Image 1 (spheres, rainbow, N blue to C red):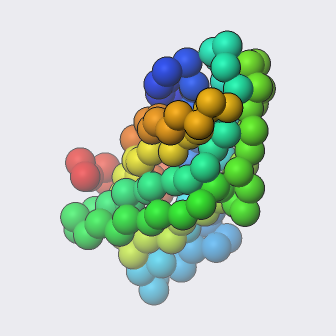
Image 2: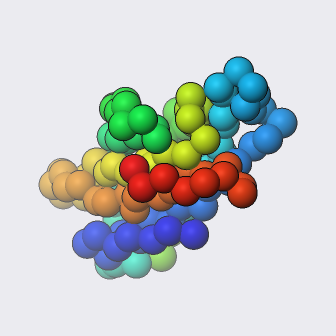
Length: 130
């Protein structure tokens, strides 16, 4: 599990390799990752957008922008939590993901929170520093 806290919002990421959706002989690897966003602060916030940076073992980078997460823009009151699972394919057996979420307060202030960098590694694969 990987964790980052920005402005009292905690983001944890838990990746896992999905062998049944991967075809290593074809250069296709797939990971699922579960993200939990927890509001540890005293103000209600809403997750409005995402920006992911996905880098494979060859240094190829893809950036993904979008509204909300998994079709939702969750509202997080103090103590509130939101969890979702998504996935990512790569052409290499290792990689890394990081990024940020765009948040908005009830007063209309927007700010970014860190998504912790997390490693995507096929179990027992040689580790490559990305």
